[in-house]
Image (tube, rainbow, N blue to C red; front, side):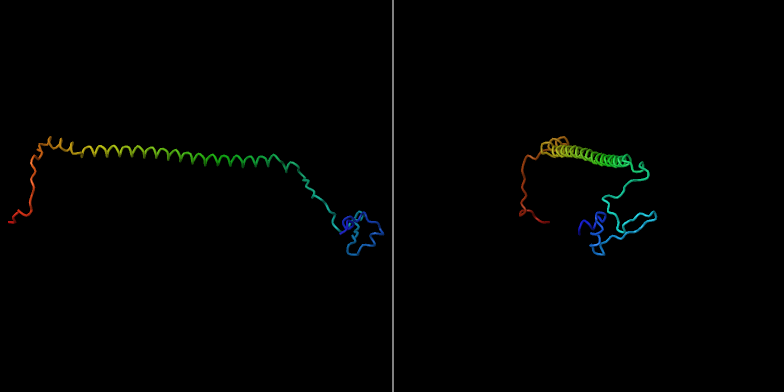
Length: 146
């Protein structure tokens, strides 16, 4: 397409007659008598003006962004505190488990000292038992059945 298709105002009358019929801009007369083109006027950007300039404020947008940021930080702080408290509780439980394992080991050592042969001999003498001095063997072949 030629540039003359977009800007019919730069065309002279002779040049406009040479254009094909379907490319010619149709002139429409408005109420005030001025000629307007039937084709829309090209604009680079829409008109973005507003009636109330205070309605479109950067302060409110900034406030919303800051509020979302603060809420995000507070939720992150809450999650971090929950994870930290769980970690402290886990550490306390590990320390309690270590203490319980130490107590179990101490009880097993005490039980093994009570069941040692020397300790059993001392308690047997205290109860009045005597140690066996002679060894007797039983022979199953010499036992008579009644």
